[in-house]
Image (cartoon, rainbow, N blue to C red; front, top):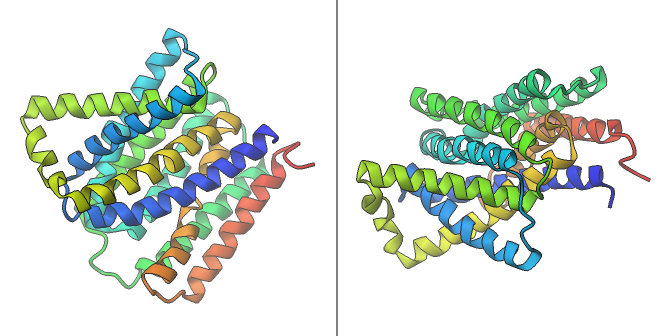
Length: 298
């Protein structure tokens, strides 16, 4: 498969995984604190990724790449995930994803400044369609929900956006000499270590994990972590490795398009005309971006 086609498929797969994960973690957030969810998620992810690496082999990497991936893990996972889960408790998955679309714009700006990405005018148009379509989809879902967007949730959501956007820029620089799954493992291990040290230092570690004595809750959590680890994190790095960061993140922003049918099927929610319009805009933007990448298709 062409590497850029692989990047496109990975970005869309990551968006779908995060859509599923957002719904699952929203339910789990009613029983677990945001730091607890981050810590346990990363520990489970480390085990899963270590098992995968045992099968495919660990190639190793240079010191600079290791340092960059560790910093990326601390920013995007230890901090970004914790803020994300905290905002999820106040805003809910749909409103939060709307807020997270700001991260796509911020990541493009950071990629232009720090990585030298130079999207063409047509590519900017494609990204605008994606972000605009996503916004329409989610606006249709949250416009009537007056209690969804509390100030506290918005603040935590913005902090998550900042941490995740900066972490992706740092990760891009560390991906040159390492495979995506190795990079995911290092970032995840760094995030888990950071949260573990914080829990020990604050004396809250025991309190965080007490709810997980419930076997049913733990099983649900393991399913959600598996989806996000191999779908969300790993595939997002595969996309960043094979595409410009700006393009990869624009494709990742199609997540609400996947949430829409999930909500209709599993939550029995009606799909409005505005939501359908937003979906069409987003698909058009994704198609435009795919066609703009040279040699992507035979």
